[in-house]
Length: 316
Image 1 (cartoon, one colour):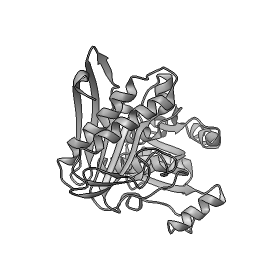
Image 2 (cartoon, one colour; image 1 turned 135 degrees about the vertical axis):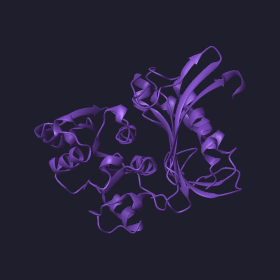
Image 3 (cartoon, helix red, strand yellow; image 1 turned 90 degrees about the vertical axis):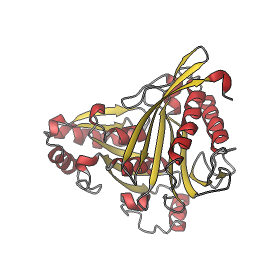
Image 4 (cartoon, helix red, strand yellow; image 1 turned 120 degrees about the horizontal axis):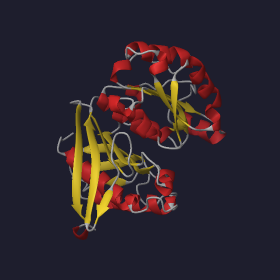
């Protein structure tokens, strides 16, 4: 993929963040998501590429734009798979909380897992603990392995996990181990990425969440040299049929990084909508909007943080 693609993708997430940020704390998550989706969709069509949405806002009959299978770009140039989450954290924006992001992951055509909209069990760590985790191992064993890899005591670790009833047993096991916990209301993509940056204070992410978000998180961690493992959780007969169509008959199959994001080239781009540990949220002053973004590329291991100032009067 052309390295100039990274800056084009930043423009897309910036547009989505600028649109969604206006809804901060206003209690209207659907409106915030719709604003981000429309802004992202419009900006995509200015990029010279043959893009296909493999993870998006839903199936064709469920979403008016950025639906799975939609073609994006000018239909010229490189053929790519695109995973989008125009607003990762709709509830976060509605409540005015932290860590909402506008997100894109891009890989060569056929290289991103077409994960269905179902739950995925996940484990994510940064570069120091890459190769040391096992999603099938007991919680304590994974915590012990991460602590050893990072030259820490288990008591020093911080585990990010969604605050959900389904995680009660896991939360109890983490507390029994002596590790500390950061409970999240939403936004497990941000939590997975945070494991790769020391300044965020997060060492490992555990628990289950959306499978599409798992693919996006894996693309980020591949670029960061981290590690991600997932297991799709089949809960209904319909989901079982869908997995069979994907060629997955073993419902306990562990999806490793290369199963989720194939090859050695992928981009991950995110712009902060609300303030978080890694990225600042959108700020507005008069006709100026300020954004903070991160761009990563797996092939080169390059990570760039970009601050943008935007004249809102000159943007659609």
